[in-house]
Image 1 (cartoon, rainbow, N blue to C red):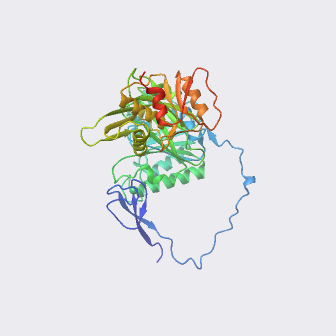
Image 2 (cartoon, protein in one colour):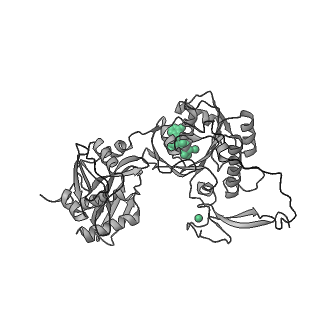
Length: 455
Ligand SMILES: Nc1ncnc2c1ncn2[C@@H]1O[C@H](COP(=O)(O)OP(=O)(O)O)[C@@H](O)[C@H]1O
Ligand SMILES: [Mg+2]
Ligand SMILES: [Zn+2]
């Protein structure tokens, strides 16, 4: 009866496990993503088994803290997302759509002078020649950087053993395979097993490992979500291919917060960190156009200004709503509030709401700017380039206070805005930036009257 196998079905999209097969994943609703997986069930009856030699837990006060546990990656924005540098011996998963810039980011990290340690870049996707060309294009010629074009996990591990690097990049987890496992590379069984072995290596030998994982829509290839629970840190690289703007976000971090984002711009010679994301996001705003307003959201400790655009036009047929960068339900709620409490008849209109730069505003503090952008488009009156708005909108149309208002106002003022609509009731005492004129409002009606009234 030893070594009995248990069969489960695992979703390649979200990692959910079920005991029965179904055409549709019960957790995330994807079709045809459940894959059969054989797990070794614990053997029954441990009755007569002897315990191993005594294992002695240590006192937390006796643990060794002398060695530096973090190191800078040489890329400021990456350090920020990791929580102040990479932790030695950790395994970081970097996920993102193909072509978004994962290899570029990690190769640039390998090339940075600041690292000063031996690095191995394993690519299962590109040949040595292609890697060389890529390095030349990015201007990388570090003496400490070694590359290996290989997909067999055992050979990769033996390469690591021979070189003894302190930092290893595996690009990508979906291309490498353990020869002992019969499933194809990229299958759930393979990516899990390979990641498990890499994780063990990281912990046992204190090697920091970055693993690339493609996010894709094909059911047969396992996405990074399947690995999220195993690794120490999960970063997602996002952005739209049509824009050069890229955002690095932590979805999980065992050694830091997941609030911080890293902002990059993709150029000919690779990725560049963006110190002033707001400036980039706001460049090229249309002058004197109705339907645009600037919001300020907090991304971790950093206030970021973003432009919300709205286009409202009378619907020929059924009113349709589209929104990009904003939660659909939130936008629907704001439109309803605007109709009921703001007195604007938007329910019979098509409404399109868009956040510029591919940023997603998932903070209620962006509500007021969204409402004003919609109202401005509906009334066909511009708000002016010097106006920003911060505040949460409640269901009765009231404008509510938001956290860290002073930090937001300081950033708004720093970027040259002269007027800002804010909630009339705020929790903390406001430190008004000298150049900024504040327009406190109690509800949606007052906000519209304050900035969109006809003179
Ligand atoms: N040889 C090249 N010349 C110019 N641009 C390139 C080249 N290789 C990649 N790029 C650009 O860099 C972007 C990111 O590529 P890459 O880092 O390989 O993405 P990922 O590893 O996430 O799939 C691509 O979308 C492409 O525009
Ligand atoms: Mg790549
Ligand atoms: Zn699923």
